[in-house]
Length: 132
Image (cartoon, rainbow, N blue to C red; front, side, top):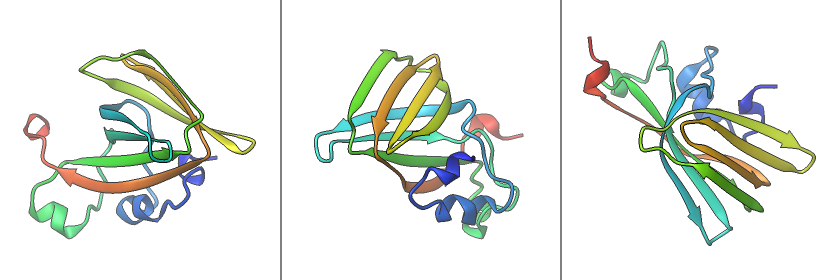
């Protein structure tokens, strides 16, 4: 089972990546937020791979990184063990009966349990350090 099968709607990711779907291995975590409404947790991270055929708008603007906002709700449990400002994490999603587990391993470690997982936003930007 792919991580996309656990999402409520994987259309946005599939539209950008086509058949060459990205993994959640060693993504760059920018933000982990816990919101009282829901309650909900939001992850903002850069995917490790850029699509082979990105949207024309992204090509024209010279973007080279895809960033995802992912929401988990309602949250039942959150455990944060380590948090590093240079957070490279190996993100795992697991369906467990009616719950979804989000597990991060790497320089930042956390565990979140909720019932729904959605992509809130997918965008792109240019990271000059990745330019040739």
